[in-house]
Image 1 (cartoon, helix red, strand yellow):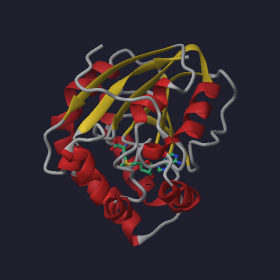
Image 2 (cartoon, protein in one colour; image 1 turned 135 degrees about the vertical axis):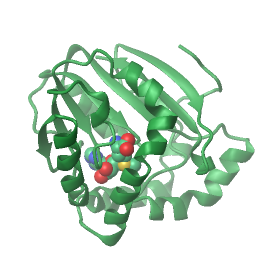
Image 3 (cartoon, helix red, strand yellow; image 1 turned 120 degrees about the vertical axis):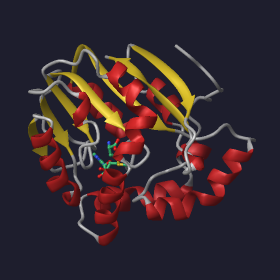
Length: 238
Ligand SMILES: C[S@@+](CC[C@H](N)C(=O)[O-])C[C@H]1O[C@@H](n2cnc3c(N)ncnc32)[C@H](O)[C@@H]1O
């Protein structure tokens, strides 16, 4: 486990401000609605796929190395992660945004993935209790209405010993310049990127979600989207 900066325990002043609370229901609704912004976001994620591969590829390869034959991925968008699964893997893709579906299907064909697309949010997955060995989420918990609700659902569907594999951008440390900048940019960023929260303390929220263990690495990426640089990645076990 590599820790490169402090990540405080969940703090409602960071995660659950009144702004965040007011917009949660709306964001959950918006994720399932086709819109110009939705199309632009899905196209943007696809356009950034090469850059994301350069930035995250090594970590994703390590995280995805020994996944089982069937994986649940929540919020796969246009299918950025499909290249990291073994050809033939069955991916149950829980993706509420309709504008991403065509790109996701195309990526599945390209990478020989057996895609089982579920067009609804990860807050309520139509999967049995303790029926899944691995759930994957990358850059998703920043955008969901309530990450605690989604993580409770992830725990519900995982078998004992099952893995939740995550890679997420997170809030900078309070008191730093970057944290201040994240605060200034928070609203326009959230508008432009469909509800993405720059200041969400996702590492701490995952650690508080009731998993048996959480093995995580915190890291920064250097990117032109600089308010986006602090990240957390790892594996939580049920
Ligand atoms: C920034 S994109 C990330 C896409 C992809 N995982 C990646 O790493 O490139 C966020 C994705 O989360 C999805 N999303 C938003 N709310 C969701 C929810 N409640 N349940 C599942 N997915 C959701 C969005 O539709 C979008 O595809």
